[in-house]
Image (tube, rainbow, N blue to C red; front, side):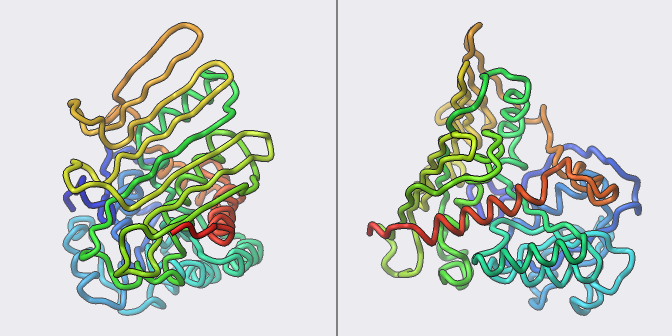
Length: 361
């Protein structure tokens, strides 16, 4: 599947193969193809060495499109969800079904003895959160989340490495900008129903909250303030086309983010995503997808510390280690890619931010 830089819903990054297992050692299936992110998730797992066996969705057109993309990988169309869940060879099920249905699917997958890997946001209510927590505890399986704006972006991965090395000291504030292009005619009806997509802070805001927790090292946070609005899309009354929030971590770190659906048509990519990370001894800026009027598609990292100023384009140089780490975590029952606590805390906070949001327009 060709990567479309202008279409965020079907943006599916491809990296260099970096397998951590041999063919047939870790077998996966894809189920629930409602969002195009399933392609990026599948790409990442295949590049890390996973073997793709099955795909299932009630919509045969979605299945055929997926088969066309991965036919050379040997994927087959399953006749039902149960054919996948009852297959003892399947270790992990990846899904990008309708957002409000992900938690229930995750429970079914985990109760079938398999790990589950879902697109963000992994849930839309606190009731679903408790359901997932109970299933994780009961089954011992994983409910992992594709927070792709950090996990599948090389500049974001590189920033994490800089922070771990102490390049900017202790992180005290993260500022995230997450604009997206709406492309409303290409979106399914459920995307505009708040009960199904969860609202903008729950949806694309989940990326920003996850990054805040990760870069600051906070285990929990309080939503201090949040707003939502529909400024320019009255034809979609349940759509939030703008949202922002301020958080304070349990370690005192501060976070602010803005998300919106106002990427102009003339921009070469689906959103000019940026992250600013302030530390006690320096700061980092990420220009993830584009640096306007400059060569190169994105993944620019800028930082300054006690010794000087730095600029590097890391595209093609860092890779996406999360996927291999996830596979090994599933095999070894470890938590190196992401802890279950972290994955669900980000989900909890994005739901709370949406629930507490003041509607400004």
